[in-house]
Length: 269
Image 1 (cartoon, rainbow, N blue to C red):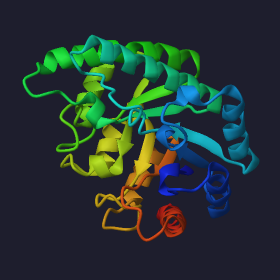
Image 2 (cartoon, rainbow, N blue to C red):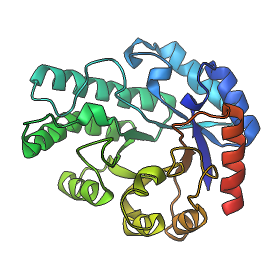
Image 3 (cartoon, one colour):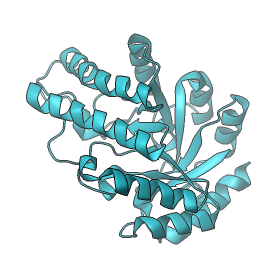
Image 4 (tube, rainbow, N blue to C red):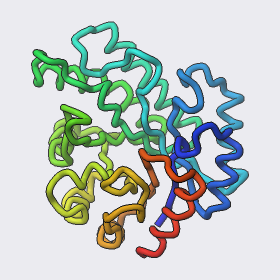
C-alpha cells in the first residue's frame, strides 16, 4: 500500500524542504494543493514544472495527486448561472489537468465545495447540468494526459451538492467517462452513517484515491477512527492507489503529524 501526505501540512515550507522531509519520514509520495505553489498554475512555466517534478523524484517521491483545485484564483464556480465565470472555471480546470500531466500526477481530487455551491433560489437540476457541462472539457483533457478526476463527496454544512458516495456514483454512471472516478475521504465518509469499510467495499470499483484523516479532521491515529478495517477492506478489494494523509488541524506540528500518521497507518497493516 502506497502512502503519501498533502503538502499544505507543511505551511510555509519550500517545496524542496517538504520533499526531503516527506521522504525522510518514509512516504512514497507527496500530494499537492496547487494554490501553495502559485495562485494560478498557468503562471508556473515549463522549466519550473520540470524542477518541481525533479525535486520530488530526487527524493524518491511521486507526486501522488492534486487537490484543493479551485481555491485560487478568486471567483471560480462550476455551478454558477454566470456563463462567463463558469467558462473561466472550466478553462482553469483544463489548465490544472495539463499541470497534473506535466508533474506526472495520475489523480486530481475535485472537492472545492464553495466553487460548486448551489446558490439560494437556484434550481439544483440546472446547477447540476451546468456543473457537468463545465467539467467535461477537463475530463477530456485529463484523459489525454493520463489523469483521472475524482469527484469528491463532501457532507453538509461543508457542501450542498454531491454530498455522498451514492450521489457521486449516480453522476459517474451518467457521465460514463474513463477519466472520472471518486475518492474515499475517511473524514467525509464518516459522516454518511455507515461503516467506512462498508462504503469502501460498496464503491471500490469507482474509488481512485483515498484521503486518510480522522473524523475529527486531524491525522490518522490522532482520534477515534479505526483505520484497521478501512485499510483491510482496501486490500481485500484490490485497491492499488494512494492512501494520502490530509489534515485540517495542523497542530502540534508538521513533523509530528507526518511521522505519527505514517507510523499509525503502518501499524494498522
